[in-house]
Image (cartoon, rainbow, N blue to C red; front, top):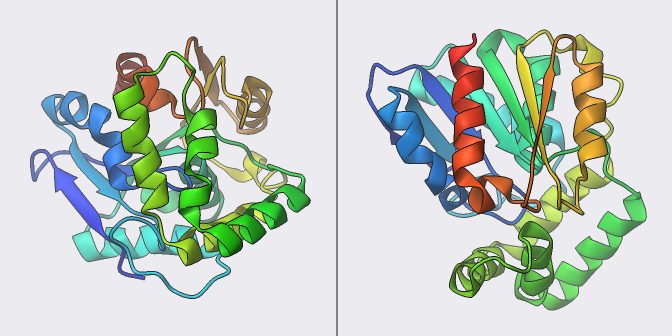
Length: 251
C-alpha cells in the first residue's frame, strides 16, 4: 500500500519514522519535526492507510497490513533501517514491527499505547457508530480523550477537524485491527532498544498499559509524562521531544 508521506530534515540524516494515532493525520507530529530535524535527523511522517492523504482500501485491516505499509514505505525511500516512534495505533504498529521485522529498526519509542486494548465489543460498537454516523459524529468524543479539558479550544477544534476528515472506511478498518489485536505474547521477542512513554491523564491507554509493555520487552525503559492525556506529544511537546531525542541518541 503506497501510503502518503512527508520527509523533513537533512537527506543524509539518520531516518526517524513517526506513526500516528487512530483518526489522525501526519500533522499530529508537527511539534516534533523541528526538534528532530535540528538535531540532524531525517524525519519521515506518514498517514496510516485510510487516513489523511493515504489510499483507502476496503477494510477490515490488521496490524500486519499496517506494519507492511511501513516496510513498503522504507523500501520506496531506500531506507534499510530507521528509528520508529509511534503513538497509540502507531505504537501498536511499532510493536508489530519490533516482533516481525526487527532488522529494519534502530530503536522503538512507543507512546500512549497498548498491546491489547479491549474489550472487543468496544471496537465493534465504534465501528458500528462510524458506519452509521461517520467520523464527524465521533470527533468531539475522540478529541475529548486525546487532550485534557485545559487544552486550547482553537487547537481542539483543529484536532476535531482532523478526526472528522478521516475516511469512514479507513477509521473503521483500523478499529478492526485494534479489535482483534493481542501483542502481549510477542513483546518478549522484541530485541530492539525500546522506550515506552505514558501520560498521567490518558484514559484511553493509561500508564499501567505502558508499564506492562516496558516490563515485557527485554531492556525497555518506561517514562511517564504528567499533565497530558492521550495525544501527549501534542499536549506536552517539549517533554515528548526530549524523551524521543534521548532514546535516539542512546542507540
